[in-house]
Every structure is written in structure tokens, then in C-alpha cells.
Length: 176
Image (cartoon, rainbow, N blue to C red; front, side, top):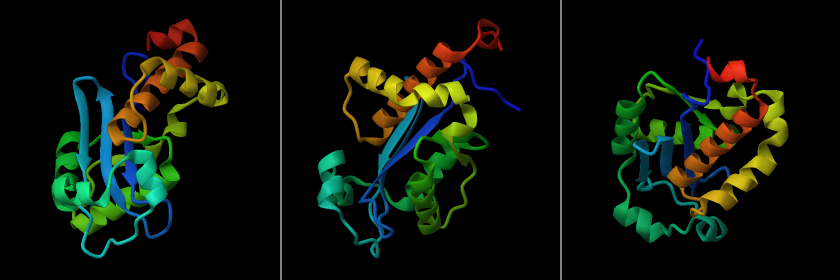
């Protein structure tokens, strides 16, 4: 089994959505592996996706007009993600909601995912989980990048994982 470490951190995927209700849908998806291997795409809503939360728009700053005009079709996004991530496992820090939006995206696209989405907790120790929230706040303050956009949130999550890993790992684990 592949083990993530400081030299090989997990690939993080994040999704922004039209809201948090059951009727919400993905409007932006992004992943972060490294500064040279990252991706972000706006998703044009399917014609029957109509739910919209003004509160969510205030958080992520994406209007319905922007995603409708600039977004790619669900099919285009799903195919590109499959091409970039085929055979890999990517991780989310909000798996319960991200997996729902992930499945909506691929179902609407009529495309089967060729990679896996898993909860980031599956590649964390208890010690990492214990310091996660405080570490994430430090990372956010240190990076000074906008939040609530898919690829930047993914970068923040990976940086948090790396910092929590380095604070809780024994030196010999860093060599693995």
C-alpha cells in the first residue's frame, strides 16, 4: 500500500457548490498535487440544476452568471479529471459533501470516474487529527491566499496535511 509522506503528500481535491442543501450541485472543482500539478475548472450547471444559495455565493464569490458563461460542461470537466488523475486516489477534507457533488458531476456527465475520492482522515494519524484545526489556521494565516475557491482550498488542505505530518512524525517515517 502506498504511504504518503513529506516527499509524497496526498493529492487534495476540493469542490465548491451552489449551496449546502440536498439540491445543491458542483460549480467548481480543483485539485492540488504541487505548484506544477494542479487544476481548477468552473462547471456550467446542467439545465435541471436550479438551486442557488446567495450565502454560498458570498463565500466563494462565484455568481450563477459567471459559472454559466465561463464554466465547462460536466462532461468536459469529468473527462479532463479522468485524464489527469487516472488510477490515483485523491483526498477531500469534506468527503461527506464533496463525494455527493463528485458523484453528481460524473453522473450528469455520463462518465465513470477513473480515479478514487477518499476522506483525508484515511491518510492521517490520530495525532495529526488532534492538531488539524489549529494547524490549518496557521497555514491560512501564513499563505495569505484567497479561500473558498477549489484549487486554493486544496492547496491549503495539502499544506495543512504536510505541517501536521511534520509535527507528528518520527524522523524515520520521513525517510519512508
